[in-house]
Structures are given as C-alpha cells and as structure tokens.
Amino acid sequence: MRKTVLYMQSTLNGQGADPGNAMEWATVDAGTWGVTHEVTATCGAVVIGGRLYEEFLDFWPAAVTSEAVSADARRLAGWFRDTDKLVLSRTIEAPDDSWPRTEIVRDVEALRERLDAVDGHVFVTGGIGIASALARAGLLDELLIHLNPRTIGEGRPLLSDALELRLLEARPLDSGVVVLHYAVEHEEAR
Image (cartoon, rainbow, N blue to C red; front, side, top):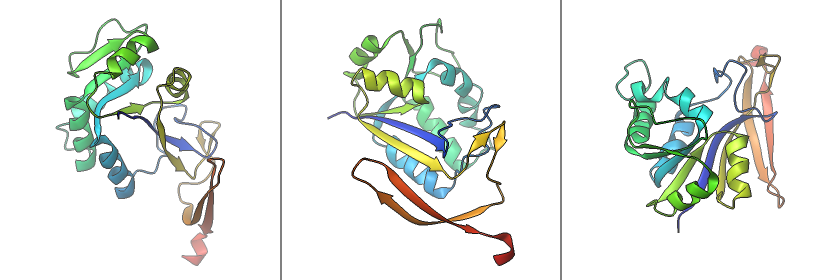
C-alpha cells in the first residue's frame, strides 16, 4: 500500500527555514544522509509545494553534476531528477525545463488522483503549509522529522553553532511526543 511520507528539517522552535533560507542551522551528516537515502529508495514520486519548488530549482538540477557538493547531495539530486515531481501550485504556469519529470498539480483533489497512479511511496518535502493541506485531505500517512537542537530567532541561531550537544536519550511518549535529552559539552571540558 502506498504511503505518503512528509520529510522535513525543523528547529526546536518549529522553524523549517531561517529568514535567509540558508539552512545553516540544519545538521546534515552521514546519519542524515543515510535516512534520506533509505526513505527515497522506497519512493516513486515526490510532492513539493510551489514556493519550495522554485527554491529547489536554484540548487538541485545543477547539483547532479556539481563537484562543489557532496557525493550524497549529488545522489539525492539524481534521485530528484529521475523521480516524478508533483508540484502543488496554483500560480506556477508550467514546469521548468531544467528539471524533467515535473508536473504542476493545481489542487489537492487533482493531487489525490495523481497519487493513485504512483508506484511506491511518496516523498513529501516542504513545511507546515503543504503538510497541513495533505493532512486535511487525508493524504498524509507518516512524518519523518529531523529535529535539530537549534532555535531560530531574530534571524540567527540562538544556540551557538559551536555548542556541542550529546544526545543522552530519546524517549517516545504515548501521545507521539518525543522527549529529547541532551547534555551540553562545554568547551572547557573538551
């Protein structure tokens, strides 16, 4: 049975992007890439909101062959290139030629029909807007959230990038909340 999986990065205070969309706060390491590749290997399509699609056009199509990005980023860029992309947007007129296999879908009901034809799971990338739209329509099956131990406020991370954190425990509660217990590794103790 097809599953629609929302995949996103978030800060402790629920931000998915900083004011400049730099994503400098996000921790992307071998573990992050491992989860990303594991999930995308099961997915036959990706759903992207219109605004994020336009932002992705500035990076992912060129990343396929770019030596300036990691091998993992090139691998994901190749997956994006070779996978059907369903862009949920009322304002984008036509898909950009730089990213093949892209279809603009005007509303959630049209997306529902399109998803019925997908072979495999569906990777949803984006923020709260697309997550809410899919959840209200009954089209969201799973959430895969990378919760970064950072916060964003006033346009900058409030927890220093130099701050070293060590995860002591991740405790899931019956409510679905996950309690994350970190120890702060102080610089003088390192």
